Amino acid sequence: MANNTTKTAGRNRSVIDRLGGQKFIVLLVVIALFIFFCALSPNFRKYTTFLSILDYSYYITLMAIGVAFPLMTAGVDLSIGTGLICYSLVGGYLITFQGWPTWAGILASIVFGMAIGVLNGCLVALMDLPPFLATLCTCMITRGLGSIIVGRVGISWPAAGTEGGWFRSIFKIQMNGMNIPIGFLWIIIIVIIMTFVLNHTKIGRYTLAIGSNKEATRLSGVNVKFYHIFAYVISGFFAGLAAISYSAIFATVQPGSGAGFELEAIGGAIIGGVSMSGGAGSITGTLAGVFVICLLKTGLPFIGLAANWQQIITGLVLIAAVLVDILKRKKDQA
Image 1 (cartoon, helix red, strand yellow):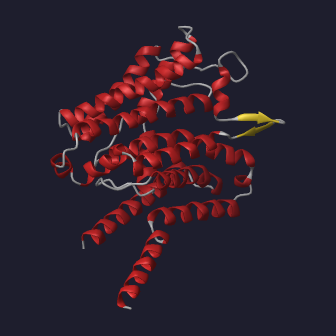
Image 2 (cartoon, rainbow, N blue to C red; image 1 turned 45 degrees about the vertical axis):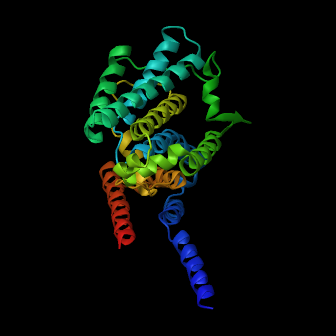
Image 3 (cartoon, rainbow, N blue to C red; image 1 turned 60 degrees about the vertical axis):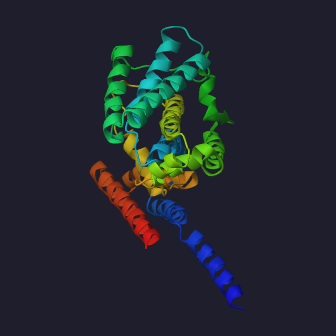
């Protein structure tokens, strides 16, 4: 009888833990923010606003999914924001000025992102540079490199309806004069795939293990350096994908921009439950966390708050997320 009671209590605690987990709380916050902004602003309820939120969410979500992996190793990747712009500039330059087909420019952007990811991983895993310092350096490198390659001139990828402009329909198509945001379907598919990678493959398990206890993982026979580097390659790959989505959404890519994008992506991942101490994280939670950032950035102007207030409120939300992570860590250690 006692055993049955214990099992029942364990199941109940499990249900409570799932319902009270950070992912669930963040989802509730997303719903509450959406209702709040809809109630206070009729303009927020327009379809065009919904499209704007999704357009903004694509490249932030892709960066956030990628950067979640270095974060889960107790690292970080600060190069993804300026890197996104750099990869987009390189791809657009090859298409516009060198006559490359669009698919080749897309591939070049992704490969370039992965190359920077390899560089970041080698600096961190092989040379033992602090992740913050290593990726800050590559952040500055990609920011300057993009400007040098294009000569400080904005780059425009092929427009929709023109030769090579097919890539824009990956994220948005027109039906009966209405824009349909099919990019969100791709985001959902990617989230499902990366959730499987994180939870059911060696890449995901070893990424979490490195963040939990790097030395113990090494002593268990895992090639820690390889999987540590691979976490940064994943981040670079998704920064390359984010560059494609950014190029598809915006008409022109300006060199020297992108600073701050990485903070929004990292913030979304942290709000969604990725621990800055490493060893814990969720891709679905990251998606929900990104939408908290997107709703705040898009919705606050509709209720009359200036940009400075937007930054303050977003910062307070991030502080709350970090405090939740700290309290959760202390509870687990107790």
